[in-house]
Length: 279
View 1 (cartoon, rainbow, N blue to C red):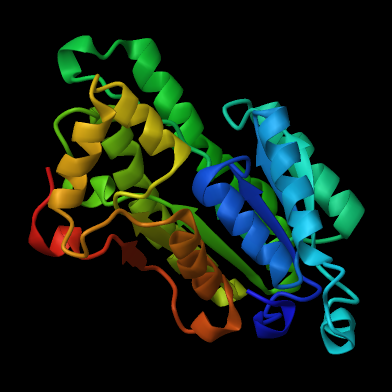
View 2 (cartoon, helix red, strand yellow):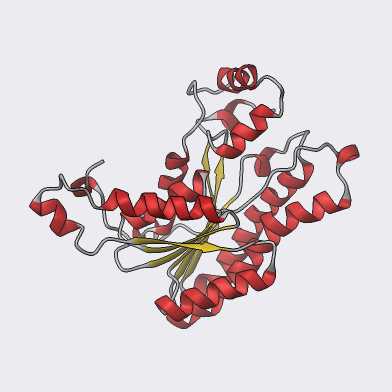
């Protein structure tokens, strides 16, 4: 994709993206930067998020650009790497305070950070349950709460929370994960109603089977990742898993002015799998 073909819907805006070191988070942070935003990408993995930020920076300036393309990228967005554990409330406060101090505001918040816990109920210990809820759900609440006064004072702000189709239909092997993702959907609806009069829009996205590093780990845990991958692809109506970049495009749409009248709903990005069946 050339610079001339990229829309600059977020030029001059400030975005926070959690879980930005890999997968959907990295694709989303990179896409925001590509469209002109100053992006603070947060991740617990220092090397991953710094590599993501470096790659996004290198992507924006290419020597083969024409004069017109160079002019269009004269004020490119930036991807700033931040290291934090979103399960730690003090880390969240520190991150938001830094963004507000350096950038003066937040325009878009994308709560993407999350972990899976592939344990059935009899295997699931209370520590497992609490860890999943701290990372997947409490972090969403805390980031929203920390950025909310900034949104209210400016009468403007967008939040996109990353849920999952597993939060819509559930699953046998991940009760903690599915529960947090269902809660994210409801929290997003509640906050959309809460913030409407203050110009705040809140939505969630529900990805299906997306080809990310987390998916790779899940496949490896089966003992036969090739067979497991094929089993998933076989039940995909579109015949493939989705790409992280495809989810990022949905997130950017919900965060953009193109979606000004969309709030309190979910965008399912799953290649029609939930329209048929899901295990």
